[in-house]
Structure formats: C-alpha cells, structure tokens
Image (tube, rainbow, N blue to C red):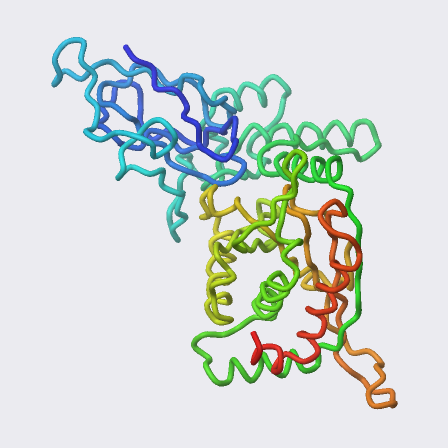
Amino acid sequence: MPDFLLPDLGEGLTEAEIVRWLVEVGDTITVDQPVVEVETAKAAVEVPAPFAGVVMARHGEPGEALEVGKPLITVAESAFTEPGVVTAAEGSGNVLIGYGTPNAAPRRRQRRAGTVVLDRPAGAAGVISPLVRKLARDNGLDLNGISGSGPGGIIRRADVEAALAERKGRRDGDGDRRVPLRGLRKVIADKLSTSRREIPEATVWVDADATALLAAREALNAADPARPVSLLALLARFTVAGLRRFPELNARVEGEEIVVLGAVHLGFAAQTERGLVVPVVPDADRMSTRELGAAIAARTAAARAGQLSPHQLTGGTFTVNNYGVFGVDGSAAIINHPEAAILGIGRIVARPWIVDGEVRARKVCQLTLAFDHRVCDGGTAGGFLRFVADCVEAPVTALGDL
C-alpha cells in the first residue's frame, strides 16, 4: 500500500497545516482528486492525489502541521486495477514539484457566501480535530466560548492555545498573552530578520508637493472611469521609470557579485487579515500606467481574499509601500530580502509650502527610500528618490516623458 507524501509546495515551504480532509478512510479516490485542504505560509490549497485507490489511513488531523515529505494518506490499490499496479494519470508530472498531472494544479480555497464548512450544531463545540478536543479537555477549557479562526468557524489548535495563554495571563495577573509564531507570521519574521542580518541598509527621504499628483489622478479617472488609476499605481509608474535611470537599485547581491536585473518585477506591500504580504507584478516595466494600475488592483483583491498562489508572492526585484493608508507620515521600512531597495510614501496632508516665494497650503507627502548600501552609494539613491519626487510634483510632465 503506497503512501502519498505531502509534496513540495514550492518556494522553499517546508510544512503545511491541515485545514480539512476532503476524503474519509474507506473512500475510493481517483487520480488528481483533491484529498485534503492545507494552508501554507503563503496560501490555502487543495492537494490532489497522484494515484487512485482506497484510502486506508489519514496521517494527521485538522490544525496539525505536517512536514513536506511526511505521509499524508495511505492508499490501497483500486479493485479496478491489476494486483500490484498503482493507477497513475498519463503524463503525471510537475504540478507541485514531483506529482500530479498538468490539469491538476492545487486549487486555492474559495469562500462562497452562505457556505458553511463547520459541521456542528449551533451552539455546540463540535471541533473537527480530536487533538484540539483533547487539548481543551485536558485543560478544562469550554470550547463553546472560543471563536474559531478556521474556515467556517473551525476551532484550530492555535485558537485553543491562544485561549489557554489568555487564561494563564489573567490568573497570573500580568495580562500576558502568548501567540504561536507560525504560518505567515513566522515567514514574515524570518524574512525581516534575514534582511536586517544580511543587508547593510541606509535610508534617505524627501518631502514632496503632491498637489498636482492628486489633480492628475482625478483627471485620469474622469477621462476613463472604467479604468481607475490609484495613487499607488502612479507611484509605481514613476518607480519603474526611476529604475530605468538608476538600474543599480533593481538588483540583488549574490555571493561576491552584484546582479543588476534586466526586468522589473514590482512588488507592493498589502495588508491582509493573515498579515502583510507582497504581491508581485511581473514585467511592470513593460506596462502602461493603466495596465499597471489594473494589475495592482487585481492582486490586491486576490491577496485580501487569500487567493494568491505562492509564485505570485515571490520573484520581486523592487518593492513599493503605501504606508500612508495607516495615517503615518514616514517609515524606515525593512528591505524585502533579497531585493536592494524599498520605496515608501506617507500620508498626503495639507501643510504650509513655499510657492513662488509665498507660503501656501499644499498637499504634501514624504517619500522614503531604504537601500542596500552594498549595491550603490548615496548619490545613486538620492538621485533616484529625487527623480521620483520630481515626478510626484510634476506628474503631467513626467507621464508625458515616460
């Protein structure tokens, strides 16, 4: 009886958490039939089996983390195959690095209105995972008082652990709460730590008069309301143009070499319920302003819905970050390793500004560039940032020349 091992889900992911089983022990499965839904640090996917047969065992429970290469299910050969022969799909290959067929890519989880995943009666603490039940029972915890963070309200192990930590904090009187550093939060922590450890970064910033930028955006959207352009899209457009003039910032350090990259795959920071993610727009340097705006909007929506695949969150060469949406003016952002720089824009607010020798109220923002000092010096970084600031202050002229 062959074991189906948890496959390599790509992009260096080493484990996945079981969300829910899609098959029961005793079920007969076919090639490429989804058997389990798992959640990695980057996305939630349904994993298809590479062969047919009868499910004899499931290795793991919902809420349990499973390492890549560990058994996922055990399958006995189907009664419809010859003895000793495991049915495999013709052309099975490299959908998830080593298994599956070309038509069986993992399906991202879709949340449909009115769909309830949790199969428990109203008001009951019917948690799918026996391990979660045991953890709560052993600690005298009432599951009816816990809100589940899983699909359809499923209570996961992390939810019980958080409730236990909160209860311990109340008993100790210190108000402490322990949250497991896992999943996306752990990936973010590891990546930021790597960036701080390996990249000698420096930061430069400048204030810019964004009054004309707001007017240009309004005019663009009035001319074609069906294809609106965001401020982030305009900033991204100026960024791409700046990287053409200062390509040293579209680079990375590999060993003893600086690799200046030919294409601009633009990442942008997006805040989601699962945490901060950086979707990537490939070949942003080949796009028009509206095409870039549409790509950013589509990926932002997909990120917030949890529908981005791992490859859509990797491969960036430069990142932009609109932290102004959080109501802050500036930020010494951490570079998205292994990239060489990150550009941020703060909130746009009315401030006194000197125009033609007179003090006037203008819409002003702060632009910040954190850069890897190994790839360039302050002259290059300052030149790039000044170019972007000039585009912000005179967008019509800039767009006409880009």
